[in-house]
Image (tube, rainbow, N blue to C red):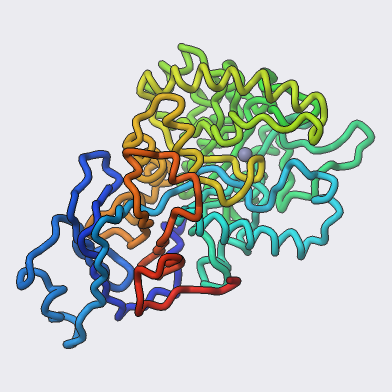
Length: 440
Ligand SMILES: [Zn+2]
């Protein structure tokens, strides 16, 4: 598995020093009040207290062939790691299924690109797409053809016939455009063949649905989907390859436990988790990606079918109660929105919702940065602002620890840097630096 999908657009000679901002490095410790970050060739070569002139290579310009680095004064601002959304669907906009089905395939791809760009501009520099996106989108971002978060892909989420990702109506027609790989697994042979096909297709993660869901018409979150023995078989198959992590869409208590016992790395949603499930997660170090941006959002009953509205009201209340219990128990949380089910480009609302359910603002930031990087197995490159890591960061002019809700507004995310390249600078804090503007 390729590690971080480094953009190939990094300018090796680029040398920048960020001075004077408060630094929240993603590790959860107290912020540094007056920090310095030095970036060279897309990576951080220094992150710590502001250095005095003379000790800093920034002041002297050595090691750069005599060319002094660009020094940016960021007094009064706050720097955080680029955020990671562990659960998006760039190809999806679920509240208008009929319109989506009527679109040309090319239009869907363009929309995916627009969604990816909006996500990056909201402060998300890495995202994991858990279904519906093929590697053309991921690779186009990596090659610098379009702007977006560096991506990990599940490509196609798996379920049995009649399960959460079987979009076949009783009359045999589909409610969704065809998936890049057939999502149905009923037998052991189906499981092996499908996992091998997904790996061949470039999947970085395998997504299984061990329960039904809220948005699907013919099942409920309490229904069991992919059984525990098939989850185990998938974990065995991926272990023979690159060890692609397995993520389970799991909402009802029994399917959540089946997923954990089968060996998944993350439970996605986890709304109805019971005490036994929480114990199992703590024991095994399983991550919870609670997708609160979707769970807590009640749609206008005029815009959605009755079944969906009713299930949403019921499961939203369950999530509010049980995810809070899991968080308080210390389950490892990584943030993800399920964007596609909720709007794209408002991803950092998830930070606010995590605090609403009991995390401290600092814990919520760690959940959206370091923890998510650990879940994606990208800790060597992203998730924290430390020497050696990629320069993926966001800069704001408020204190997110005092008011986390401000992160939710993408207009307040003034600077987004990805691998040292400036992707957004809406307040012109980097006067002489070029901002990337493809698909601008
Ligand atoms: Zn999802």
